[in-house]
Image 1 (cartoon, rainbow, N blue to C red):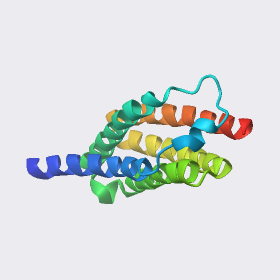
Image 2 (tube, helix red, strand yellow):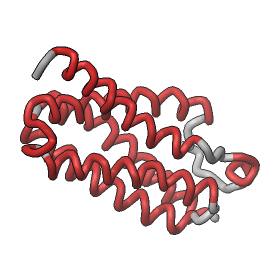
Image 3 (cartoon, rainbow, N blue to C red):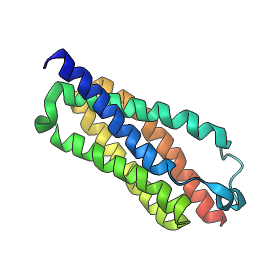
Length: 155
């Protein structure tokens, strides 16, 4: 692979990852979210815009490492899982914040966590670096799943 193609690929995978964030960021939590009963361990609102860009960057680099090593054809399953989890990631914000469907959002994020787990394990076959870059995302979405469950339970 030529160096320019390698760098274009890196930028491309990072942009694809951030696209999920942009799709989700269109809907803001708003007053509805503020009015919900939330557990005491809910992070302050400023945490989310700090954590998510870091995670999207790590995810994009992870996908790039897999793509760089194996190409899309040889890593089709792993990269397809990656794209599916990105779609579920972007959808969750709409379901939870936009449509106020806490239970449906819980089902979405549970499925999201499972697909992230499969993606992370599939990435490990191609690149241990990609695997480790996905682990914080897996942990964060696990935490977000517990938070979504608690909010659903409290409301």
